[in-house]
Image 1 (cartoon, rainbow, N blue to C red):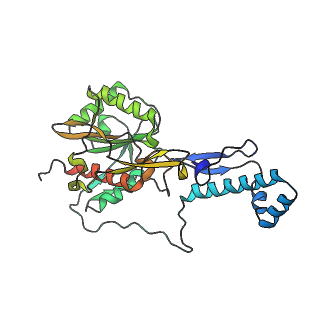
Image 2 (cartoon, rainbow, N blue to C red):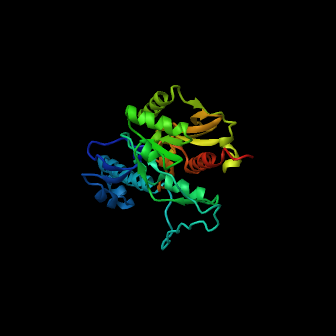
Image 3 (cartoon, rainbow, N blue to C red):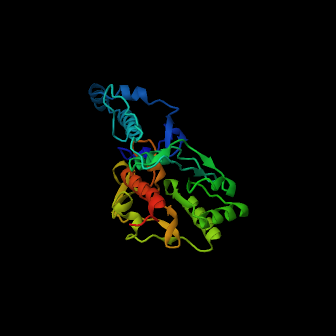
Length: 309
C-alpha cells in the first residue's frame, strides 16, 4: 500500500524502501539512499532553474522523492492527524454490570501466527463491555488441550500462516465443542494460507466442512448488538485511491452448528487487522466499524443465544 497510498508509484532501484513488519503493517521504513536533500530542492526557484537548463533528470528525481515522502506519511497516518496538544482518551470501565462474574476471552495457541494481531480482540471486547458485562481485558493465550480449554466457554483463534493441530489437540477441541464451548476465528489480512488450514482442521475435528451462515441468521440481528445486513469490504487495487477499492455486500461468515446453535464462527475476511490500534488497516478485509459490529454480535451471540427471546 505504500506505493499507492496517495500517488501511484513504482519501486525504484536507486531508492529502494526497506521495512520492518509489526503486526499488520510496516512500522519502520528506511531508504538507504538520499531522499531528504531532494525534498529540500522541491521549490519553485529550483524548478525554474532546472527547466531553464533542461535538467529533466533532476526534476524527475525531485518529484519522485517528494512523492515517496507523501506516500509514507499518508500510509502512516491514514490521512488522519491529531490536533496539536491533543491528549489520548482514556478507556473507562463500565460501572453498571449485569453480574459479578468476570468474563475471560483467551486466544488459542497454534503455529500459524496465533498472536500476530495482539490488540484486535481487546478493542472489540471494550465495545462488548458497554452491554454491561464485566470483562477481563488482559491478553491470555492458552494451548488447545482439555485442561486449558475447560476453564473458558469461549476462545478466539486467528492467524495468517498455515498450521496443523496434533491428533490429541483435535480430540480436545472436538470434546470442548461437544461440551458447549465456542470458537470464534478470523483470517488475519484475509490470508488464504490460514483460511485453508482452518477449514481443513475444522473438517478433521468436526467430520464435515464448515457451512456458510445465512445472512438472515440471528447472529446478524440487533438482538445481539447490531443489525448487520450490509458491510464494506476493502480489496487491494493499485488503480484505486489509497491502493484499495471498497465494495458493499452482505457479511460473509462460516460456521458449525450444534443443536441448532452456532458454536464455531469463522470469518475468512480479515477482522483482526481492522480492529488493531491503527488509523487504517493495510489488509484486505472489513473496514473497522463493520469488523467491530461483527465481533460484538458474535461474542454476544455466544453468551446469549441460548437465552429465550
